Amino acid sequence: MAAEQGFKIIARNRRARHDYQIEDVVEAGLVLTGTEVKSLRAGRASLTDGYATITDSEAWLHGVHIPEYTLGTWTNHEPRRVRKLLLHRREIDKLASSTRERGLTLIPLSLYFKDGKAKIELGLARGKRTYDKRHDLAKRDAAREVDRELRRRR
Image 1 (cartoon, rainbow, N blue to C red):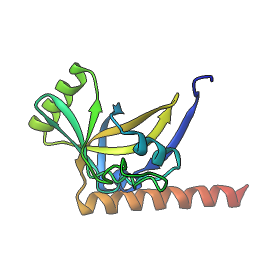
Image 2: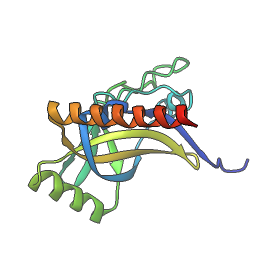
Image 3: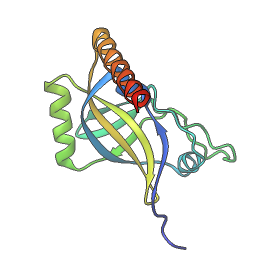
């Protein structure tokens, strides 16, 4: 059987870009069990409450919900268990210093399969204040109005 090719998105965290200002993006692998992979291949996951931490020079993913595999038996996994992230040592050190010194947070942005392997896109993020969110909404509305006006004039 040939190796799986391509890119398939499983879940996106849309609230992350609304609630946080993303400063840097990192791709990481995930350590998963068999039933977790099968559940992900069925397209079921939620990143809304997820975050990543760095403990003892290892990266861990907390709060990501991967529901139990419906056809699984006693080997099924815990839906919200802590999962290990696979990153290079330099990346872990860089992320650890950024979260410790600059007060940033690691937020999962998307979960996907890349060439048959489960990957997660982590964003190094700073929390937005409510006035920042209002400012972004006003800017988006103004751009939408300009686009409407240009289309109407054509």
